Length: 393
Image 1 (spheres, rainbow, N blue to C red):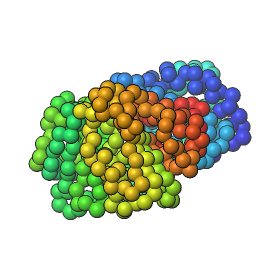
Image 2: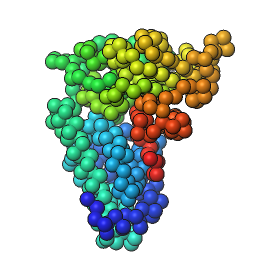
Image 3: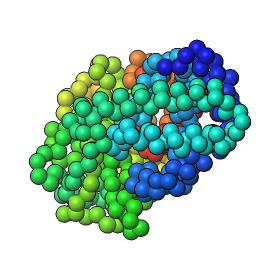
Image 4: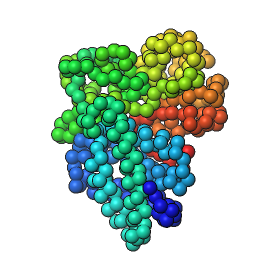
């Protein structure tokens, strides 16, 4: 835990570190992958590295955690770290890997900041790193224990039993255990899928489960985007084997009976479908409003399933937005343009659950806060690295 002296040092040096993170994080990853090329091939997502999203995500996490130590906010800290821990667990991250990250991250900090990294500065930031790492290691250990797996040993082999084209660029895969049974999961959670690529790498991507936990098989949908998804579209068919992880993820149904407001964009509908499936099976009577945005009706994955699930709820309502659609289908429930909260009833006591691209998440989060929903009641899932804004609350 940071001492008062270390906390003061972090406060004094945070602007300089924060201003240099755009240099530090790419340098860190270059050093890490030069020393451990297997991590780039078999753990980190190469597409997110190439786009710069992963370095931005790391920079945001470091800065956000540092600010939370200066203005303690336990709820916000747990929110950030729990999301990271679930993602790490789905990848099989182990405590030993934090030592490797520490070595290369601090080498990059020293190279960029030079003489500004005095022994006192190094000591404070070293303590901050291990405070963050220790919390993550403990959370991940608990997730592994809850899932009844050894740390890092999250992978199992499954067989594809069904492949369905659900939109022009999206397929749905159903998989079954190869011997034994698949473990349970909570609606809204995801699995990691690891695939071998032509260059020998084994890349990983996360996909939300859309079926019922009561079923003996898992279903997930794959939009054609990135190396792993392209491999699944082009190379994986019924009868093929896949390596998948134990389910993880913290976008799950809240324990109370408050109204729900589920908002998604594009393939972000998949965790929403998982949540709606559970609500439908439970014959849940609470008010559930579902908002969805997509490019067009003919390119929307699971359009019929989404509508049927909402229709099955006694107090369900569905409103959808399309970038373009035929004028004759436009109504109060089908709108044209970007999703907005105009003419949408928003109960400030609702739990809001969001899933979609980062820009969508950011704009909708602000929109719901603008409608007086407390940020503690806004939950979300994103595909790809989480781009935390340094000052985000």
